[in-house]
Amino acid sequence: MASEPIALQAAVIGGGIAGLCAAGALADHFEQVVVLERDSLSDGPAHRPGTPQSRHAHGLLVGGQRALSELFPGFERDLVEAGSVLVTSSIDVRVERPGYDPFPQRDLGLTSYALSRPAIEFAVRQRVRARANISLRDRCRVGELLASTDRTAVTGVRFDEEGAGQRELAADLVVDASGRGAPTLALLKATGHPLPDETVIGVDQHYATGVFDIPSDAPADWKSVLTFGGLPANPARGALLWPLEGNQWIVSLGGRHGDAPPGDVGGFMAFAQGLRTPTVHDAVKNARLDGNIVRYGFRDNVLRHVDRLEFFPRGLIALGDAVCRFNPVYGQGMTVAAQEACLLRKLLAAPASSGDPLQGLAKAFFKHIPSLVETPWGVATFDFVHPATRGQRPADFDSRVKFGAALTRLAAEDPDVHRLASEVQHLLKPRSVYQDPALLQRLLPLLAQA
Ligand SMILES: Cc1cc2nc3c(=O)[nH]c(=O)nc-3n(C[C@H](O)[C@H](O)[C@H](O)COP(=O)(O)OP(=O)(O)OC[C@H]3O[C@@H](n4cnc5c(N)ncnc54)[C@H](O)[C@@H]3O)c2cc1C
Image (cartoon, rainbow, N blue to C red; front, side):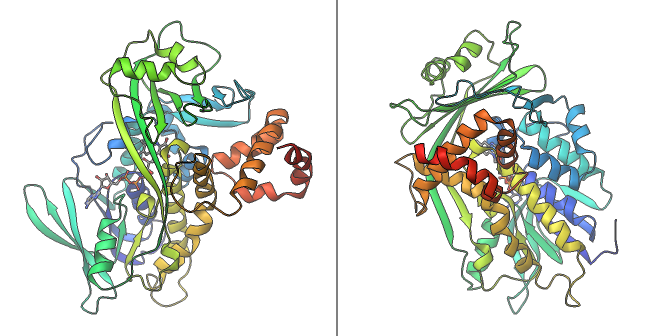
C-alpha cells in the first residue's frame, strides 16, 4: 500500500474492465478491497456470460493503455507477454473511408497492442490477483446495496454466493462497476431519491463477428483494416479486421438499424462482400473460420448525468458503462473506464478537505465526469450523420460535420495534423486541441469548401 489507508474495506461490484481498474485504484487507499463478480472466473483468458461483448473485436486505445499502465505499472509488458500483436498507428492499420482508400499510412509514433478482449481482461485480472489486499470473489452476485438507517449512506452489499447462499459484506465504499448500474439505480429508487437524467442516442448498431486463422498469403502491407461505410444503399455498413494472439484475425462486421449482418457463414461473407471496398472480404473469403459467427445488438449510447444529482449516498460511486455507454464501433469503453479509475485514484490520494475522506468523494468524482467523457461522447454524437439515429441532435451538428470533413482533409495532407487527430481519437488529448488558432487558420479555406 502506497499510503496510510483512508478506510478499512471497499467493495467493487463487477469484475469486468471497469471493476478491475477500480480495484487497482482503491488498493492503495483501503486496507482491503473485495471484488464481487457474478460469473465464474477461469484461470486463463475465456469468454463468460456476464461480458457477451468479449466475442467481438476489442481495440484498446493508446489512452487506455496509458491509463492501465498508470494503475498497473509495466502493464504494456504484460500485453506483450500475453501474445499481443504490435500495431503501429497508422502504418499497420489500413483505414478506408470515402475519398481515402486507404487513408495515408504513416508512422505517427503510437503503438497499440492487439489481442482478444478475454486476454486483455485476464491480463488486468492477473494484476489485481497479485495485489495482496485485493480479494477477487467469483460466483458472487450482488443483489442490493445496504443503506444506513437514515438512508443517506451506503454501508455495504448483500450478495448471493453460489453454493453458500446469501451473505452481507460491510464496506466503507462501494464501487458500482456492474455495467448497467442496476444496484445504484435500485438504491436511489428505494430510498426515494431522484435517478440521474440520461442523454440517449439510439443507434441500433448490429455486430456479427468471426475469428479466422491468418492465411499464409495474407497481405503484408497491413495488419488491420478499418473500413467505413459510405455506399448510398448502406451508408453505415463497416468492418474492423483486428489481429489477435495466436496468429488469428477477429473480423467484426457492423450495420445499423435494419441492416444487420447475418449470423450464418454464407450471409456473413455476402455482407462482407457488400462492404464499400473488397479488402476485408478478399482477406477472409478463403481463410479458415475458427468456431461460429456470433452476433451482438447495441441499441443506445447512454450518458448518465451523475454530476447533476443533488443527492448521492455517501460511500457509493459508479463508473464504467454504469455511467456512460458508448457505441462500440469507436472502441472507447475500456479506455474511459480505465481513465475514470485513474481519476478515482487521484481523488483518493488528495488530502481530504474535511476530516472524512469519503464525504464528498462521489460529488468530486462525478464533477469531473463531464470533462472526462466530453471527447468520447463528442465522437458518439457523430452517429447523427445517420438519419435514423434517435435523440437530441446537437444544435451545431452540421458545423461539427463540416469541421470533421475539413480536419480529415488536412490530416490526409499533413502528418502533424494526422498525429494530432489520432491522439484525440486515442483519447490521449481532448478535442479542445482543435481550437488552436494556428490550426483553425489552416482549416478556414477547407471549411469554406466543405
Ligand atoms: C460489441 C462490443 C464491442 C466493444 N468493443 C470495444 C472496443 O473495441 N474497445 C473498447 O474500449 N471498448 C469496447 N466495448 C466496450 C467495453 O466492452 C466496455 O465499455 C468496457 O469493458 C467497460 O465495461 P464495464 O466493466 O463497465 O462493464 P461490463 O463489461 O459490462 O462488466 C460488468 C461486470 O459486472 C458483472 N456484474 C454485473 N452485475 C453484477 C452483479 N449484480 N453482481 C456481481 N457482478 C455483476 C458482470 O458479470 C461483468 O463482469 C465494446 C462493447 C461492445 C458491446
